[in-house]
Amino acid sequence: SHPLSELTAATRGIAAGDYGKRVEVKGSDELEELGAAFNSLADSLERNERSRRNMIADISHELRSPLAVQQGYLEALQDGVLHLDREALEALLRNNALLSRLVEDLRQLALLDAGQLELNLAEVDAAGALRDTAALFRQDAQGAGVDIAVEAEPGLPAVTADQARLLQVLGNLLRNALQYTPRGGKVTLRAARSEDGVLFSVADTGPGIAAEDLPFVFDRFYRADRSRGRDTGGSGLGLAIARELVEAQGGSIRAESEPGRGTVISFTLPAPPPA
Image (cartoon, rainbow, N blue to C red):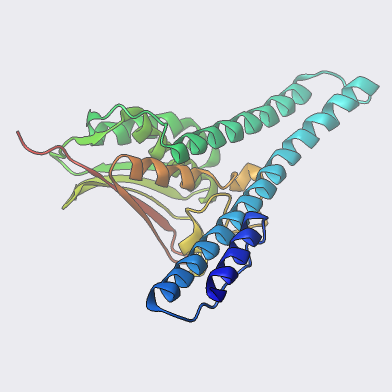
């Protein structure tokens, strides 16, 4: 009974929040298998707890800066140091928009995690989705001095997708590409046939991503260049949401990059079967 007593004590430790508990069970094959399963469970719980703590810290960090800026402006206005002019209003609105977008991103991730995000799947024109996305960001790109190009293979089939969510994915990828593409650069939106349906891609001429950072670009709150501010580097949720939305629609997503040669984010969505 000693191995079972050891397992019981370790289980109580994990229930109390000590996720570092592990057991070394010797005995019958069934007991050793149970001990291995317990250790695997403890590893998973420890990773999840670490991820939860990191996410809480990241959310607090992301909220702190725009709130501090807003508070600073409001206190200066209250003390009469600043006057309520156009510049002050624009700064307050800009930080309010950052907060609103972060909260909305977190809400969508929570819905995706809970499997509660509703998808209205239908046949969507792939080339049209590229053109619509480019049109939405054309003015922002012109202001940043970046050119947007659309390349769609002729005769593309429709894809089975939620049109609004497809545009959201493309928008997240394009917004991210524009943030990292220097003035005079180019972002290209492409769509082509693939074995699984239609392959979409967003390619930029930015600085690229280091090999050690590439596996983590779809992680929540991850930014390869940690020195970039929120205004230039984003919150680190855009690619995470894109991955969740693509996978929820039956597709897959990947990133390819090389320092100095830009980045390409590609994802595949299924095409409806032929009639």
